[in-house]
Image (cartoon, rainbow, N blue to C red; front, side):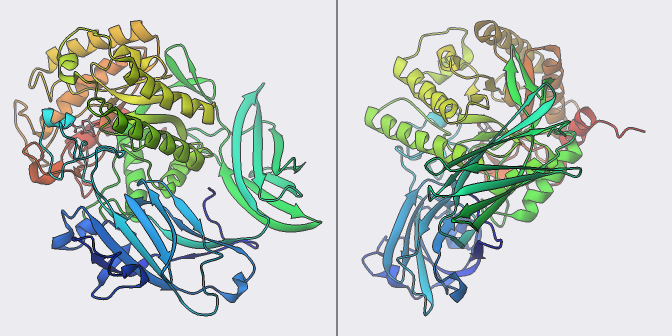
Length: 597
Ligand code: ADA
């Protein structure tokens, strides 16, 4: 699903703005005909989460209705007209002028509908969207789990099986766009480097088999051209780039790829992409970028702010990427769901190494096998949708197919040295997801973020071991020396068992900004710094540790519980309004390379 573009052959019309909104706490909207249009509305911003905008929507998890109107420009008369939602959490049902158009389940990834048969070209069109965010154990991510795996630490309100707020709403742009017939329907870019020559393989698809493709790859110094004749709608072009300027964190160089489609001697469509020439591979226990070992230094993040909630917030995306550069980070993980495409465009431009994660957080393997199968089906769909959306970003260097799947006997495993074998169906669940990712994209390594004590069988099919570990916080509080010793032994055991690179994908301590103490007290800024110092020192001492992501870049809203002061997870190196704690300054001192000269 290509990101909508405006050019000579394509057009788009962003419907973002102030729409009409009403809650449906009794879930009567469909019976009362709200899909044909509704009254008694209030204003809402699209995109945004409804939770942050009114007192009565703050904790509202349920059904909300949106409506707006639009007209079709006469210049769009004979084209294929699509309506694209960047993300709606969690379920969306869409009507145009009272006629059902379609529905979609699953937040954080785009979906679209063909409107050609639904719209009125002569007069205005009423668009109505019913959004629901019911927390259910069969969904991904799960909620209202009978025996909450997370209640080991906290009883969550609302009842999520994960530690962030279940924001609801139309979270990213709603775009009406037209594409010509025939058009370029998809493109996959693969880059490699052989004998210092950059190879760019372009695989495009068209809606019509009788087409030709012309491409040009532009850099500051040269333009390369190529063409292809369609083979049943598939068009393949390979370009060789001499003396390529490779994409990397230190030089995130992007080439401009322009494609044009020819049908019966006439150019009918064009599409352009910014691409990076780079390779990513695993060699032994190291991650290699462009043939050189790299170390991931950065954060887990969240899409979160105190006004837009999880809604797309471009100023915040720009600011967060700049703050991570300021700290000297070169990497982040899209915890615990796919972020906006705009974030990945920023990561391409800034040169961040992104671990791109699906919404599969809070998975558990107890109880109803039917529900486990339902969750697997949803996880597989999300892996496929994620790779389809993000496969051409040079910044995406690894797929993460889950965060902290909970083994059935989590607590026993975390605190004991035993490696009890785990039921095979649980291993097959994760092996299936990793295999799907590799089958869809064999150019990137695959992983998932594992809890400390994860069954070693679960690590058999990942290329990199990612480990979330909190010694010194959830256990061994104030005993950082003991925590580091235990972790060091555990890391050695996991490495000797797997031989794979290990990334500490989460480590952190809740910290109240402005609270100081000597000696370091829990929740103080000093304790957060001391804990991160120990972990960074440990990471530097292990050659198989290929990186460390601090949890978390900025404080974020989560569910209400005694463990989350003021409803926030406060493990941020920055506060929720992006002010640095001591930890941000400490990380900058460790990660940012002093400007040369
Ligand atoms: C887990 C989880 C994070 C967050 C973190 C914490 O590792 O992956 O989402 O909940 O713990 O702050 O406890």
